[in-house]
Structures are given as C-alpha cells and as structure tokens.
Length: 463
Image (tube, rainbow, N blue to C red; front, side, top):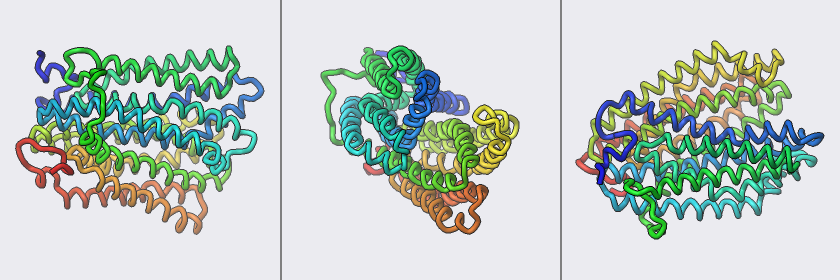
C-alpha cells in the first residue's frame, strides 16, 4: 500500500509552509465563491428569460438570499467539524477514527439535511412573510424556497464530502467537481426557464439537480480504492463518538455564522431606512466584500486543518509556525484587497449601477470595511488556530457575542442619534475591532499549544 504521505495532495506534517498554506487556501476560497454564484446564475437567467414576469421572478429568488445564506453558513460550519476530526486523527495515525468519521459524516449529512429541509418546508411561507416580502412576489419566493429545500440533503452531503477531501490536503477536487456542477446548473436552468418556461420553479429545480450531481461525483471519488479516506458503502453507519466530535466543533462554528447573518439583517433594515441609493450601494459593495472575505477566511480554514494534523502528530512548534505564517499571508492578502479597491472600486461598482451617488456611497462602504479587514484577519486566524486544537465553542461564543452584541448596540443606540450612512457603516469596523481584541485575550488566556502539549494529542474537548 502506498504511504500515507503519497496519498495526500498536500503534506501538512513536513516541509515548507509558505507555499502549502496558500495552495490549500485559494481553492477553498474559489469553491465557496462558486457555491455562492449558483443563485447569481439563477438570477441572471431568470431575469433574461422570464418574459413580462421577469422582475417578480428575480425578486422571488432574491428574497431568499438571506435565508439560503443562513443555511449554507450553517452547513459549512458543520462541515468544518468533519475536517478537524479527520485531520487530527490523521496526525495521530488513528486510521480507525478516520474511517469511522468518513462513514458517519455521510449519514449525518443526509439526516441533518432532511431534518432542516422538513423544518424549512413547514415554515417557508410564514418565514418569507415575516421578512416583508411584497404580496406579488411572495408566491414566487415561497415556490423557489420549497423546491430549493428539497436539495438540502445533497448540498450538505457535498459540503461534508468536501471537508473529507480537505482533511487530507485535497482542496482542488471539490473545486473541480463544483465547476462541473455549476455548468450543469446553467445548462439545466436555461432549459427549464428558457425552453420549458418554468420560471423560478425551473431555476430552483436546476439548482437541486446540479447539487445532486456534485454530491454523487464526490461520493464516487471517495469510493476509489487505496485512498486513506476510502468510502465503502457497506461500512456506512453511525458511530456516536464521531458524531459527538463533529458536533462539538462544527455546531458552534455553524451557529456563529448563522447569528452573523441575523445581525447583518438588522443592519440591512437600518440601511433600508435611508432610501434607494443606500440600498443599491450596499448591495453592490456587498458582492465585492463577500468575494474578498471568502479569500481571507480561506487562510483561517487552512490554519485549522494544518494545525489539526500537526497537533495530532504532537508537532506543537509547527502548529505555532502555521498560525504565524497563515496570519502573515492573510494580512498580505488583505493589503492587496485594499489596493484593488482603491484602484478599481469605482469601476467594479459601476458594473452594478452607473449612478454616481450609488458609486460614492458604495466606495464609502468598501473603504470602511476593507480597512477593517485587518481585524477580521486577526480574529479569524486566531479562532482557526484554536479550532485546530478542538477548541470551538469558546471562540464561537466570544465572536458571536462581540460582533453581534456590538453591532446591535450600535444600530439601536448610536445610529438613531445621527441617522446617516456613515454611522451605519461604522458598525462594521467597531464590531470587528472589539472582536479581534476579545479573541486575542482569549488566546492569551487559553494558550492551547502550551496547555495541551505532548507527543500525540486528541482534540482538546476529548482530554
């Protein structure tokens, strides 16, 4: 049998880290960005081929963006638990835990996906109604969401399968499969909407089928022989110790992402009170922000996975180096992002709206948020470092309270005093700075590499 080292796309336990961390991180960023573009392609196709009802159809899909974002963030956070548990077991050379976690992850993904889908089907209409979706748009929005929810089991299965591949350093395979899936989505969406005239139902159905394609392809790839993470259908089942491990790490991360979304909905409501230009400017800038954030956040995910393997192998000095290198490279990426915004921001915003007032407000938002990304880089990498040791609940709780608490306080206590776009935007750098300080204090207090020192370590909550 080939050595474990040869089976991994990226050897996290040996050699240089400066090249391996970005080689891991950038495909992760591209995968997350592409996953978010599924709805963008649906919107574009429906907007062009739905005839006289195109505005209502586009609004019907657009009304679901916050809800779908909430679900995807929850799933991606849960998948991080799979990643960390397997990476740590690999570092400890615990082949049995790797095998059990791989097979448990498949069952967990399907069960949780079905459970969330059933819950969503029951509350779809009242949930959208509570978001003040206009009456003429509500039927299309509910129809799209209910069809989309049918695909949640395969969406979560894909996310868990991707996490399995990433745990052994293979970040390119999930990206390649998702590219194929996106092409399938575009082709099916064009067929269902432009040819069969199914409007939002066709777009939702295309998305479900395309996600199923990606999940099935990764499933088949995991079944290939002589893989350290090989999946065997007859071995699929629940191992409760693995469930507890995945939930202990993944659930806090998923809930943290979900609460972020809820806090941002409150900020969006404040922006809505300032009129059309503010809404349009924020929407345009938000698209650029999310792409940048996905790139920056991918380094913290790399930090988590690399630390997970090396902590399992007892290489604590290397764990510290991983954190420092990931942080430095992420800061370089954030500086590059600020440079690009100053150089091309107005042009990129003009692609969404040529209105000078919208571009001016959009640039104000971009400048304030992009300069604050240094705080994002700090707290994300510190949190990612701790998650690699299995410490997930504490950083998630601190981050949630810091960001959400400070943003809600700002919107309800400070913004009413000024009622200006600038003062809404200040909620972002203030909350990010507060969070970075709090996570830094937590890291100094916890000192995971010192607290859990040893030769070969299980995850922190297992000690």
